[in-house]
Amino acid sequence: MDSQTRETDEEHLNYRRRARQTEPKRPLARNLLVAFLVGGAICALGQGVFNFLLTVGYTPKTAAAPLSIIMVFLGSIFTGVGVYDRLGKLAGMGSALPVTGFANSITSAAMEARREGFILGLGARLFTIAGPVIVFGATTAFLVGIVFWAAGTLHR
Amino acid sequence: MESYLIAFGVGGAMCALAQLVLDLGKLTPAVVMVLFVVLGALASGLGVYAPLVKFAGAGALVPLPGFGHALVQGVLEDVRAQGFLGIFTGGLRATAAGLKAGIVFGFLMAVIFRPRG
Image 1: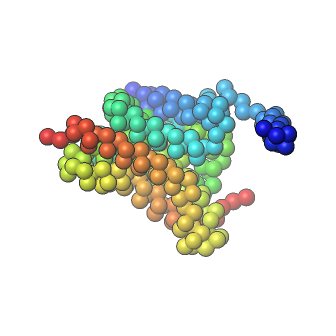
Image 2: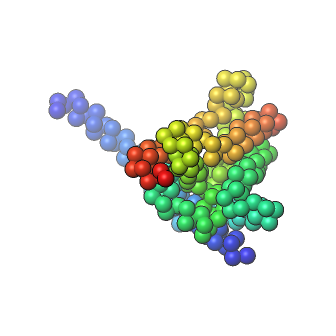
Image 3: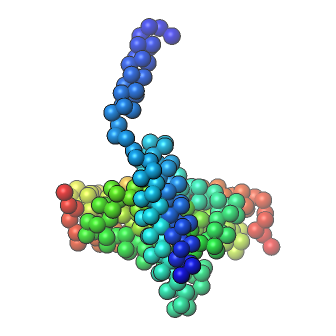
């Protein structure tokens, strides 16, 4: 290694150290508690919808689809009126991890990108965060499917 | 009443775990969302997520690992029904409701509302 690269490595290390020091502290215990409470509350709300769906004739299996439609609708509308993003600043993953947060990522991206046009703005950027979620989720499911298919455990 | 408490506890615990990964890993929420969908899909493949859904209901269905679980269960159902082709058809079929709702409602909200700030 010549002296030039060593110097840039050192600069890089210094930069990383300073970036670490100046990064705002994340109050871990508070964050965990708020994420637990907000995420738990959203899931309890979802359970209310789930229980309601069971009383009107859905089974635990068939209720999953209408449940996600309703939760996605709620996440979208509360993003539209500007409530969900404020909640997100407070709750972190507590509001991002539920499927309402998935809807929030779609709706807020779409709202932001609208000024760049309907088709290549809104239409393209709607999936800024939802896109990676779908790509990696679907690919993982594909690989799991290959394994089960190859193992032949699903064939009668 | 009990089902609400279980959904609260399990769903909240998953969110707190995701927050822990976010803070300790110094990641962005989008990366943690991707990570947890993948983890949910893997847990589903290993057969540990279905019992969690049975136990916690919306507590396991509403957080994003439940989305990964639905992707995998759809694939396995379709492979069972039609073999190899099911690997391609199953995942998005099983998650179509949530995805289409996300697209349509997201589009509508962006048409109706302006971003603030």
